[in-house]
Length: 326
Image (cartoon, rainbow, N blue to C red; front, top):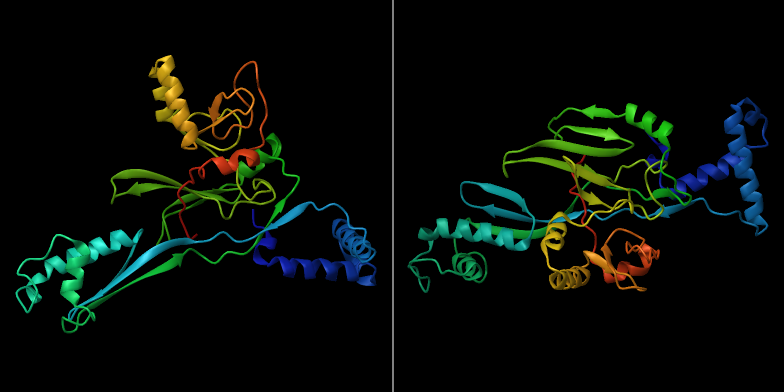
């Protein structure tokens, strides 16, 4: 579903609502469809109420844009080529630079204080090759810098009275799903309710990769008030990711450890899992529970604990890999 609101900033939407309210009582409003006239009159009523200090209850919240992903860009130039490539970490970029240096060591080996063979340390090898001022080798050099990738994002509106679509609405959204074939902009994917699901062969790592992009999720139907999307990932019959707070599984490896452990071992494993943020301990009975569930699973307890009240004690939940842009 295409939502026009995604194309406007929140302050622009505010201005459009005020324009609609100002035109609500004009003759031109009579030519609008009934639903649009009703919206214009609602806008007018809100403007009047705001002026008198009697605001109505908010039904949506403005969420700021999510930060992009940072990568390290390594540029290496020589007399014959000039290349720039991204790396996930600074260490990975320096390791690549050190490999380049060692492969070109004949250019500097045995000159002045430079040894015939490159040293084992990456940083030392790079410093010796390029020199203290970076210009020891004519017409060669490098630049390493951090950049943020990802398309520009606007603030989003999320409904405060979120309710996941019922069966009829969900069926309609599922039937409206769109398939995008692979092209130069990215791999093939399916879009449903604004969520992009990529599935493709990753030749570099030799795997079938499935990735989920949530930033464009339909805020009217699947975005919770905190800006997250209730998501469950299933491989064959195994739930490998779930933040829906329903039927929440233990992480697969943790589940196997707990199933194979003796009672004393289970206590130790559970304690470590709680410390690592994979589980949380019930404040009433100290029963260890899967991290995403909001109610204690001990049969004679069942205490409900708000996720926000224990979030500070847990590490951030796993985030699905993102693909884009699309």
